[in-house]
Amino acid sequence: MCYHQEDVPDEYGGHAEKKDKVAKARDVGVNSIVLFPKVPEAFKTPTGDETYNDSGLIPRTIRLLKDKYPDLIIYTDVALDPYSSDGHDGIVREDGVIMNDEIVRHLCKHDVSQGTIIDDKAAGHSRNCIQFKG
Image (tube, rainbow, N blue to C red; front, side):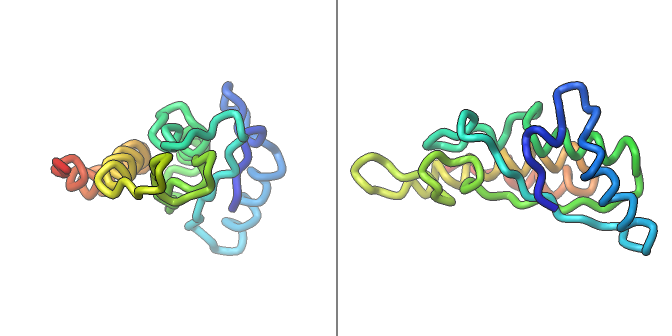
């Protein structure tokens, strides 16, 4: 399920069409979803910092859905490309060098940010990322 910024307003009201899709899916026995963000250009940066914004699109969507459906299983895509102004699933310096350690740090922050919202099991798994020292 792809979520756009306008689907989940700041006040967590949500977009009726998306909520209906989740409700319809649950009605036929589907109890897990995968969230993919469609991030507005204004929130994209070369380093994809929006990935670990606890008030960002996916964290707000997770909270909205978990409030309404506490038993819903939610998977998320831990990736930089939806948040990158360059469209890369990584961080590339101006001279073209791929910044591997910096990428791992950003992805770990992303993982921790989303994992702590989803549930305690995910948070426990995410703690492994905190160990990364670069």
